[in-house]
Length: 309
Image (cartoon, rainbow, N blue to C red; front, side):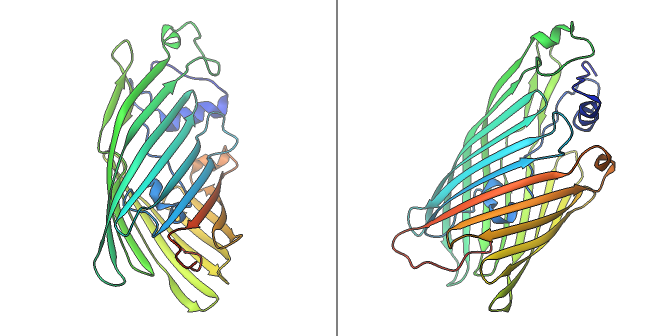
């Protein structure tokens, strides 16, 4: 490896997780959220809420206690302009060590009713990925290395697509946030950033156990070329149309606890805590994720009960 960034001893561990190979410096993947089931638009451009304007905000602090660990924020705003067409905007910002990565996407979706209770939406997202790496952040084992004077800035296009099939109580979606594989090189023509295409398959179902008790299992599978398939499974409950609680397990990675509260029919607050099940749990205090979501009824439609997905 050409550079060893020595933020702290813990930061070195982080670099060993994220950096691999001789010349490869960053091998970034799509941002990760535990509460994906409450805001699928971050993963699937085919998802736009029915006849509503909805805004979602998520902040995630991963591996708290490790300097330079990922910190991620997302903002989504989307809604229907009619029965068929949905429009949206997504912003995703992530900091990892000396790097900052900002994705800005416009989203378009088209809804096709298949029956009275079943709809299929196709979506596309178009945008820009703005990456900056500032090597002056932190301290280094070899501060005289000339590469530290070559900060990195790169802007690349984003084109993604998604399909989202859903009924009143279930959904399934397949998507990729970006078809474009990008490789970024430094002045010495060595690979610095390698972003591969990722595919997501997600689904969930809502069971009405009693009028005041609903049960929702959900799952998310992620495939990234050259990496093992990642699988999340979760089970959440909705009590009295207001409180949510659940557990989630990310295979070979983490177990999570989720809590949520519908302050009103349109305003939802959620929190998730991840406990790492790998050797990394010796060096961090877990991951924290906070979510705010606000839904505005449109077109004079009657207010519905809070959606569970």
